[in-house]
Image (cartoon, rainbow, N blue to C red):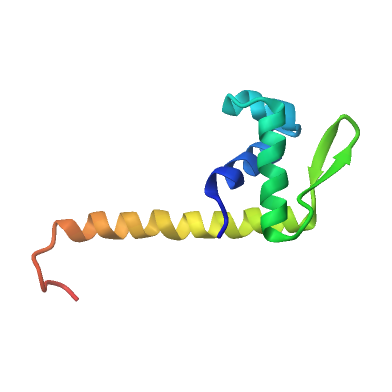
Length: 95
């Protein structure tokens, strides 16, 4: 199972462009952030980051993982909206 905290770190690296900047934004040490991403990569059996100049770039596998995470988040958000909308309906009403 994918650890969502580790996925959050990967998303931050994608956003900020470096592990150091992502770590700073998440209040982690760079070492701790790197460790989280290395463990996520081990859990999935794929490389997630490639060096690029002074920063890093996400591998195609990491980009795919984040795209799936975005789709899952969108479905979760829709489920919450649906449940909130259903709260006002009487039981058995309206399909």
